[in-house]
Structures are given as C-alpha cells and as structure tokens.
Amino acid sequence: MSRYQQQTDADLMVSLCEGNGHTFAEIYDRYWKKLLAIAYAHCRNKIIAEEIVQEVFISLWKRRQELCIDNIDAYLATAVRLSVFKQYLRQKRRDQIIEQTADRGIVAWDEEKIYTRFLQQQINGIVETLPDQCRLVFKLSRVEGLTIPEVALKMGIAEKTAEAHLTKALKVLKLKLNRPCLW
Image 1 (spheres, one colour):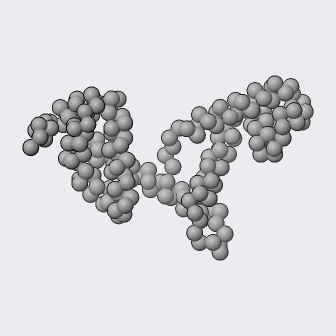
Image 2: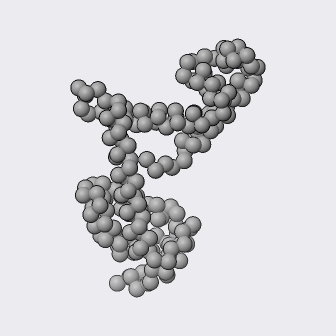
C-alpha cells in the first residue's frame, strides 16, 4: 500500500496542486471505475464513456493549480455528467448539420465535411456580430474575393480604413474561434 492510498482527498488535492504525479495517479486509481460507470450510464457507449473520463482527468491535471476542490469525488462525478451533456450537444449539432446539408441520396458524410460546415456556420455567426462597415469589408474581401483597393473603391473609403476594418474583423474571428464552445 502506497502512502498516497492513506491520504484524504483534501491531502491529495494539496499535493496535486503542487504537481505531484503520484497523487494524480492515486486520484485516478480511486475514481476511474466509478466515473466510467457514470459516463456509461448516461451515454450507453463504452468508447465515448472512456473518452469522457479521459478528458475529465486530463482537465483535472491541466487545471490542478487553479482548482479549489473540497470533494474530489463529487467534483469528478459532476465533471463527467457535464462532459456527457456537452458530448450530447455536440452530437446533436452534428446531426442537425448533416440533416440540413446532406443530399437525400448521400447517407454518410465524412467528419471533415461536417466540421467544415460547422466552422463556416460559426464564422458566419461571428461575422454577423461585427459592426456594419467592418462586416461589409470582411464580406467583400473574404466572400467576394475583392482586394483591399477594390473594397475601398467600392465602399468609397480610404484603403487604410478598409485595411483597418479587415484587420479588426480577423482579430475578432481569431479571438472568438479560439474560445472553447459548448457545441
């Protein structure tokens, strides 16, 4: 029996925050079976349940220094349930995209096409939140393929202004696309 098996959850959390890999292994050993059972009970798919549990433990390790957990058992169980819910929402969204875009004769779309469609919808949603001129510059440049001088001429603005609007639009897109989303 290792010394970690005798430690309380509170002691394990203190040690985990310090980056102790043995502590992480002990937490994993204590809870992985229970978490797998919870995930499987909700999603009824062993592979997905295993991935969810793995993601929860990876997240625990990555966020170990910022977490303040009183009850590891309850925290991990809640994290698994939340991950199952997120997985369900992602799958539901994928199914909606397939339904909206699939030709009735085509039954299976590969993941790349689905992801591309999903990403395009995400970009379109972000672009619609941009200020009017910024959005128009982006669409003329990126959708219609006009150059900055052509955009400036078409809109009756300076090239530098068109360039500034496009730069702002691209920064907003980059920022919002890098955020984790619930889909």
